[in-house]
Amino acid sequence: MCGFSHYWTIEVESLESSPMRLPSRAPIEVILLGLLASSPAAAAEGFVGTRSLGMGETLRGAATAGSGPLLNPSGMSLTQSYNVEADYVFAHNGDNQFFHGSIVDSTSGYRVAGGLYYTYHTDNPNGALEGHGHEVGLALSLPLGDHLSVGGTAKYFLLSGDETSVAGSTGGFTYDVGITLRPASVMSLGVVGYNLRDLNVGVAPRAVGYGLALSPTDIFLIAFDGVTNLTADAPLARKGTRASAGIELFLAKKFIIRAGGGYDGITQNGFFTAGLAAVSEAGALDVGLRQDAFQHTDSPRDTIFGASFRIFVPQP
Image (cartoon, rainbow, N blue to C red; front, side):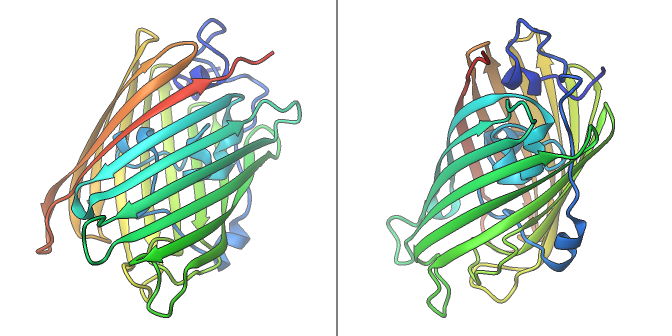
């Protein structure tokens, strides 16, 4: 089987057992378009993880392992793995900081995948508009045959300071729903709705995300993504679409190079990204960077840096 495994299978199987190949029985994609039609949403302005950050904030069509609960829960069924991940992301504008931890297990004999995560966000720690946010999520993914999987994430937000709404909303329960379709071994497509229960807060806007991932060889992945924000009446939220692309190249079974870029119609700026990773059988160290390249508004250009440590738990 060609392509859709490369780096994913390192998270899945360990390097000694054909790390570049997706298990032939591994499922792939999802079916919830009806729900998506009536409910859109997005983590467009939130935490996407270090790997996605380095690839132009893409991977909604290939959201394996720890990327699944954040970008598209149905993607967790793309590979069989048990991963523990810790991330830190810093955005210069507003001194935004994200501390994130997750556990994702897709080793079930029934090919059902599950993930649990927690994210803490703080911004403007020394300013008048200081805000704090806690997010806890539980994600599940179910394969429907060998070419389709569906998934959902139930999550709870607890917000304070400038992350609350003018009406005083401090968060609450909401959910994401996603599908992933793999029509061929080298291609995967994903569609996901974010925050389908509108909390009326800018840090959790309703949105829809979509992505295409192509893996023409076992060491190369290219992804194209879009996110359309549908919430405009909450503080810090604006309607708009972000389009981006990213690549990932796996070298000598030890190193990964990432790059990407795009245009963010929500904040009206163009950006480029880069990332590196060192990989072993036991885990991986990742770093990622996003830099605004040009801006159509008067707001300053932003720089975002991320780092993560992942542990690949061996399968019995």
